[in-house]
Image (cartoon, rainbow, N blue to C red):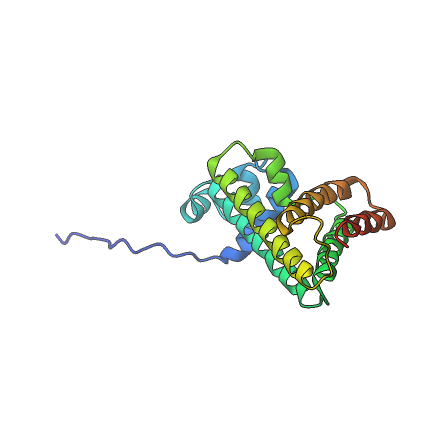
Length: 201
């Protein structure tokens, strides 16, 4: 009698990973990390639980992939904005206007996924804390380079160091995005941006 045998073939992903991450981002953005269940992710992505676990490991690992994808999207948007900037102060203004326009179009008041994550989970997991620290350092360094170039070109004053102004802009942006959750008046938001920029000129 012949014995049947089966060769275990390596499992391959048969779905669009980028699409799944995009769908998962929507869920985490709507509900936050802790309130999102695996069933929520199953329903949003169309994958079963075993596929999610096999492909991403666990809910936290999937969330980390979502944060990285969300961060990359904003890095690309910011770099695109810089292409239209005449100088450093113009670049900073365009960046704040980019976020303002997104806030005004955020009809569901979801805010920023990364800022929401900071409020919910900043000190709850080492991986999350590391990601948030890296994101913060990247943004501060990004602003510092813009300010340093602006000071060199004399579009930005030298009353403070480039690093001090970068920290100021980072904290201003964080507060601006939180303010925009409740204040939807474009004139008020534009006034805030103008006040922030006046410190630099």
